[in-house]
Image (cartoon, rainbow, N blue to C red):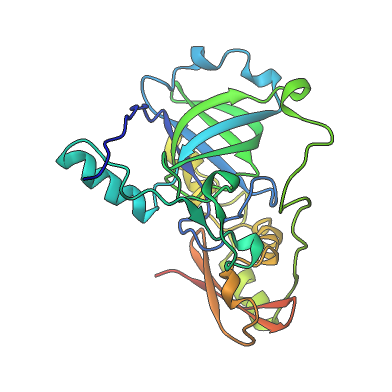
Length: 274
């Protein structure tokens, strides 16, 4: 018989709004790519009074939920049927950083497959928008996809949160980005698809602010797309494949790329999502 586990219910205070709607392509750690995104707060947590003083901090801690995790669906179904059990607990995982083959303990990793299904990220606070009387936080450097539930927000405090000479186990340094090139055809496709920043700007309301983040492709998106692909989002066990096509969805386009030779990726096409 499965052992019952104690649970704690936390409210969702907002949702992440981002150019990436799928897990494939999302940075595996925060601040690897300076991707602009937003946190759309929901009532009653969207009142400006709750954010007084936050503008003095440059970075934030975000607690969030792995909402695309298939284990989360199974856990929610179990909870609806009664008290959840520990039968589905994964004690070990295979981090991509170790090639996707070597197992380590789940608590020695940042894997999405963890008991509480929670993520923790440091992001840069770009600005606080108050639109229609409600707060939207504009951030950069997140490793979350669109519609990620936000559980909590706390200011990053440098004197205590930055630990000099901290040991980082099997991930002592940032991964080395791959070289990325782009075909002439893909460059032409992107030039046709991107919107003029000024001409396409809609009246300022909550929808227009979110659309700028999620939908409108602009010239500044090209270096961000390149930086995301340079992180090589392909599964670790497929890193040796040559000329195999992969597709990353970014805002309103599908970006197709492949590895031309070891460590060298090429963007083949940029096609609008119909």
